Amino acid sequence: MTGKGSTIKTAKNKTDEVKPFRQAVAEVHAIRPPLTQNPHAVRDPKEKVLEVAIGREVRAFRKKLGITVADLAQATNLSLGMLSKIENGITSPSLTTLQALSRALGVPVTAFFRRFEEERSAVFVKAGEGVEIERRGTRAGHQYSLLGHVDANNSGVVVEPYLITLSGTSDIFPTFQHEGMEFIYMLEGEVIYRHGSHLFHMQPGDSLFFDADAPHGPEELTKLPMKYLSIISYPQRGQGD
Image: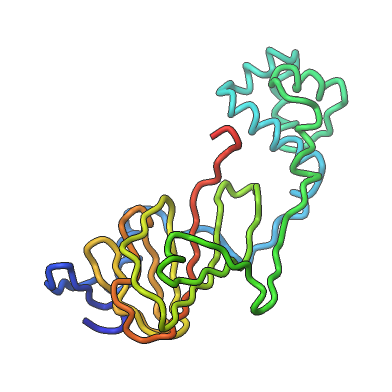
């Protein structure tokens, strides 16, 4: 088994070939469209305009109810053309129009201004000032430092970034298993990390990205002390969920 994850070893000690990362990505892109998110893109200034924010909210509430533009136009006595202009942020609706839309969609008028007025959160954590918390592996000597947390956001995803430290007094933990996806990046030490029936020999600079619903966790603490970054993401739940 190599230290760069090019091979995997199953629980039965059978070594299977693993496709190179670039080859695996190319095969995925051949089946479905490639990643389209541009991390360096800047939003069009037009998206900051109040009319655009209102239009997006109207469209979102309409789709949530499962009704068409024609249905909403009929319920509000607005023309299809006017409603289309509102949803596309081309025109500024009057207060009377907003009241008609709020009654038809079953939301307060203020709901249409939510995104325009909403602040976007950011969390800055100085080195060594992460919040020490307890998780399932704490009793095995795993130290968890939460590096940031943002409450409700518009992405629909919750992200938990941890700096995990294992020292000479740490022990392996039987298994972790939870919803969502997880990404780990080795900073210091070495570990044999299990995901399902596969074992990965991880060294500083190595990373592992996986479905966290499969049993996973350190199988063998090869070199201590050990530190790695663990980023867990899962769907955001509403208060009533």
